[in-house]
Length: 194
Length: 190
Image (cartoon, rainbow over all chains, first blue to last red; front, side, top):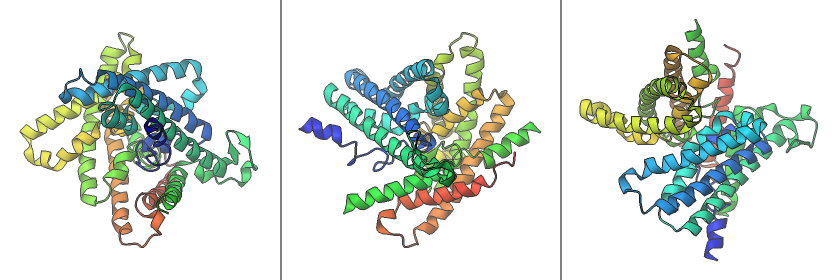
């Protein structure tokens, strides 16, 4: 039961994007379509899970003073793996996510979970925490990407819902990212407090 | 001439925060007061310029000749993290007053994706060292312009009566969206 809670908290109650406001750069930068949001979310989930596993395994060997740099190296290793695998097998997605793949290293969600959770908990809880938080992050990015794609181009996951000429191009462009996320957080705040 | 193009693009039409979404965390985090925004801008300018120079030299003289391009992400983030530490130690000794002003912002900068982003973009855009330095400084100025403008707007937001669910971050994000829209007016300038 406890592990179940640990897993589901990332979705709504402690959602990294909507509630904790972490990892804003990729959230805003890559969500011009639902598929990009999902790709970024899953890439981050992989890094988050693997980094949490390794950090929770080596936590007793790392001196307290150098723990942050060590965590960053661990995270950067997995980011490099994601980068190379995606370049090899999903070149189209790699091109559209571009700069934001190496920038997973500085995503505060990943470092935040390593520092706040994995460095204090055992392997299994860290794995579940990473998975829950990562999927919560992926869920948030996909939702935001879907909303922007729907309002901007009239499609969801590239399936046409209404003709593109009625779409508001603004939502695909940079300002739309800020505005759509602002309204999504406002809606979630409204229901969370009620 | 190309320096002017780089400067105008980095500050206005391709602003690092409002068009490229780099450095959003400090943009939302330290923009509640103009004075902290100015301090953060100073620290970012300093570290961004240094980091771009060092990462450029490492890329050209270590990674490229030995075919170690795949180590770019790891080595750049390590360089930036150690550089921030170094700057902190040096500033503390050499200029305590500057350290007082910038000190609290320095640890935050390691995880500022604008620094790593600009370092990688300098390599990707194939700039030479001088262009890279100009690009880094102009990007930092662009970051500062966006941050300080936004901080000014946010100081006014406190006085306005907004609906309950919109208070705090949501309304700030929408204001940022409108600011980004204003910056879109510069598109096509370069």
